[in-house]
Image (tube, rainbow, N blue to C red; front, side, top):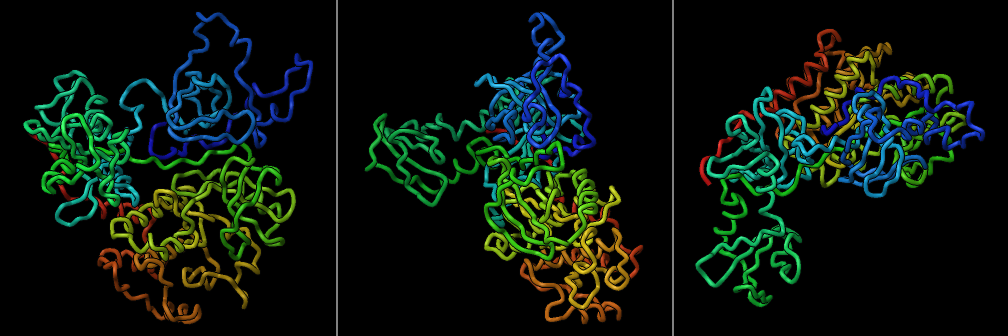
Length: 586
């Protein structure tokens, strides 16, 4: 809890909930909603006999948790909440493997079930704050550099080996004008909670330190720059300063500057400060930090693991068609009119119901923050539905072709490769094969994070769809020669496909082997030919192309593992600058 991503370790085989079984003492039968939690799992509130015990009993010890995300609920017995809301749960659930907890909302006093990975323990410790991330320095760089984050986005984390804490801040490098991350060691005063970044400004604890550096952009930002003069200058962001003071001079900028005399504000007197002075207070806050802290780093919302695989068709409403592929159509949908989902409708006859359900069970158990989570299926009648979490920015291929994709810099490109390699590393560890790894089957989330979709789906379609017939829809340009010629799929054939995917990403979505047919590609590969190093922009590093060639080794056993590919990209993107910047003086 409190991490950037869902751990994925909770989503193993669920324990049967004995409390949800029907009791012989009940005079009336339970309703269907009481028997089933939204999609079929047996759940019930804690035993009422236990709740009725004396308040002095220690049998039920309650703890407070804080919401990390909004949750609208998926069934009548769920408890909706918004980010920052406080709830109460039994302490025992914090160490159990169950994904769903029975909770009480401390404001509304309502009870219901909540997803455990959507809350964190609220005990006034740094680890319970929205700016605390359980990541290392390298992971901090990655999440802060995600597209969409602005200068001043920050997080606090443990330093190396947990010996101290560190403040990691996104800023703009004055030389290159590119985003970069600065790291500040937070030093302790003796063995107390007191701490500081610069010795001349010490704080009673870590939370006070963070609030100080954040308060410079809050409503208390009326720091008068020229104390000797009758004139006063105020610097603030957005709507941080309320009332008539919000006379926004620069509509294009996040930063606003107001000039006034004494305590009287006149719109006619508004003007910009001297630009050098403005830049000083905008970038350094006169504290030695690289910039003012504006907002905690956004967290990527983890998918909610549904309890049961099978749901009723009428519980899902298709709202907008997103695309069409060889398996069928892809739709945006709503589950129980509340939860946004993606729905893949499979063409009738594409596969047998037995094979579909068997493979869907395997896919449902594969849970990782780099995989698109399969949450449910509809298989009672055709067309079958595959229901997954919704990735708002669509396929990676479409994203690379978009205006946002064209703005991607090399660090973001490397990060996308690393994320995909991480997901494939997990599939590799689970002895699972994708069989259709390409940009069209990678999806992009809200914060430009990428996840692998359609893993395992190619394995269960009938031969006429993914076979070698004349009218094949086989993605030949992405397929390893042994898989294309002899249908010998393995994790090593996925490695070959990853090399082609690397080409797609670095070229911002170009079709591989441009101008060539699938037959011509096969002949070239058999003769030892490979794609040439693509030409930029962006410029393709030699090390990047070298990894592509390694993925295209003729012998499968000579290709790298996904673990080694992941390590390559992880090491490649590590910044060589010193780990910490110590600030002396204010």
